[in-house]
Image 1 (spheres, each protein chain N blue to C red):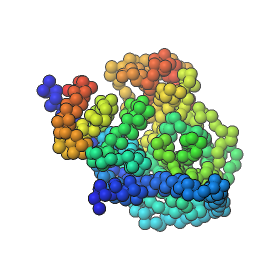
Image 2 (cartoon, one colour; image 1 turned 135 degrees about the vertical axis):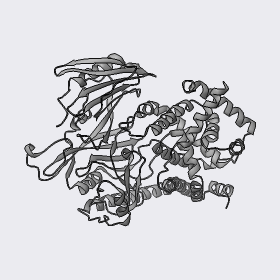
Image 3 (cartoon, one colour; image 1 turned 120 degrees about the vertical axis):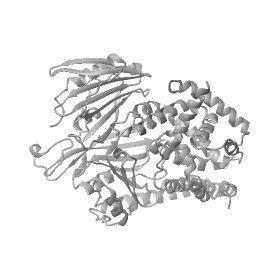
Image 4 (cartoon, rainbow over the protein chains, first blue to last red; image 1 turned 90 degrees about the horizontal axis):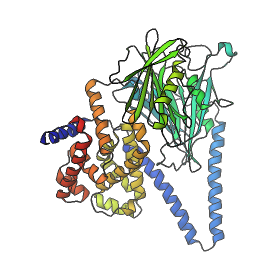
Length: 406
Length: 173
């Protein structure tokens, strides 16, 4: 027992070595959010005190109406002026903060040549750990009072994993003008010169009928990075006291970065079709009740396809199935896992099945010329147990050699 | 102006005075949040949420125990609420897509994950002392002062927590 206690002490002691890279400006950002929150609280309190001081309900009501009209007018005039700023030249590429950050980066920063009226660069920061995946550059643009800042972030990873509270998830098409018919347009995430067209993703989050978060993410045409334009917070515990820029602002900033025409795809692409448009394997079979609720993409710089992906499916009880896929030059030999095999028109596909701590995992391996394609299917519920994972795996195996872009 | 005066005046409505406390406790609260969450993004979010909750409830702080101890308790409670929602994600996200960490670091990363999992079911009355004593090198007396409890209580809580961890981490011992 004493030995175990000592060993436990050693294990716990090793946690002291955990690296903690505190995000730059954490206290300053927190203080800013606290000020916004306290101003909101104080505003409510002051209005209530005003009402209490006034003797007549009519007078109080008039004040509220006046405040409401003035607020609405302020917001409206902001949006109107924003609409007028067509092609506003922002010109902050020479800003010393941008220049300093650019010197540290392995990719060229994407900068918009358009911002809504009243917005300017407030902060530029780089957060990174030892993994290149976690390198993120964030440019923060502050606007008029009462409007949430807009954040332009760029990095090798794109995470649309917001399983429970997304209220709108829409495909945005970015296409370089002029379009000369489908013959010259490449779909998905093509890169290179000439005319191009690609997909981006736009989503909104509401709490109690109020918009709290909007974001647009797309893969850069110039660099192996994802670009995200966002505003507000996706955290349900952090209610945003200010307004969020509307959808057009996000589309216009994206246009200002890429020079591409940007528009929401009409008719909307069903979410289930999105993985295919990204060049990812997705199963035609998904157990009843599960819906695709999140997509994570990571650039793998040495791979022939631009990124790897993770598709997240959840049901109403938040049971989860995850299908994640990547390429690797090395083959996998899984210990203590059951070897499985699926017959397809192209031949058989092998994989491994394992159930550990209530998580079922089935790994498929496809042999491409220089790489192995790996697809892992996770489930954390008996609702999607072994037989369901087999069906998903068979559906994925049937696509072997039929989907990967050259 | 000392901490108590800042808090007292904040409770009277001078909320902007809390700015200095945010900076004063930035490192301690962030490290504590990191130990609770296990990753930088969640720790930063928890740090901010803790302060927003503290701001909202500053009037309820009654100066029994230290202000930092009160912040730790808020953080631990917030973390617990979030954890219940996100457990499934945590398990699966531990398997990173191509995360080329050196072997030693990967081992530490996995160890962190396992220990966080073992700590999660603990009540915050046990978890806070464990976090501070083992991960942050606080002395027994410092924890007692922070939480306004006797040193003996700190010892007994650590003992109970260790008993739980010994069972949870049996395979590693």
